[in-house]
Length: 292
Image (tube, rainbow, N blue to C red; front, side):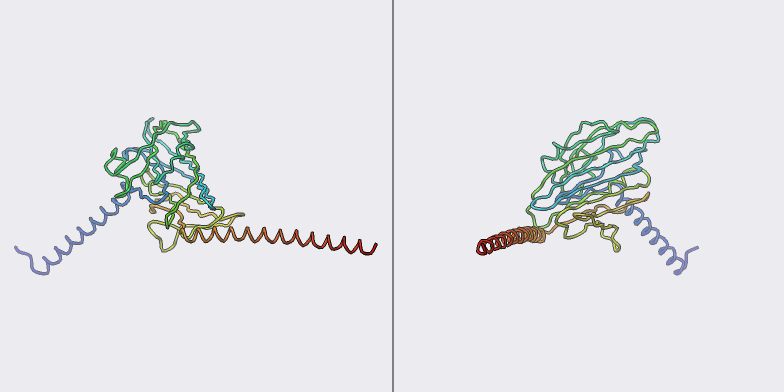
């Protein structure tokens, strides 16, 4: 028995809606897995494992990026990552990507597991290089991966720490300092993670959140000689890919010029004060001599 027109119409509508819904589900999975590591002028990234088929959980991550901006940018990075292994002891390769890594970072880069310094290797990755590492990259961008091998003991938490420092003197129009938090999605479970940019000196022109949120997650706190730009995820899924700050070269140069002018004015005020004190002291002594 053939279906009537209305029945066929309802059937096709049901099939079409099912296809659309299935496509949306696939799209959501594709965004989060694998994570696409972006590349900005000076990009840093969280940790992720070589193989996504694992039972490891990143229970906590605390990242502090100290940035002193003036004639140059002085950067100090401290990151602590708490990886829990509920299963049997395993050995994994772990990577931390950098974008436009200054050469001197490797001299100061220290990677530790539970306080023990680990050997690491730097690889320049492209989309086709050393798969599956290359599959994490955004198109047309190469990244430097700091890779090390770590043993995760059975039913234990391993604390992995990264620390390094550098000085850079960028000349481009826009200067981005970013951190890829989306790599947190490569670990199992939800994450408690904090990322702080503690900026002393010239403050950034703009906050970076990718994707942009209608209600930015960043919290800004004043301290004695600058500001802190702070992001926090409390035992949740991280939907953001990248957070950070941006400087505009003209704004940065204007701020540097303004800062130099302030210093010059202060020096002139001090000099004038000294000269006035000297002048009045000399005048006082001269009047004293005339009375004698």
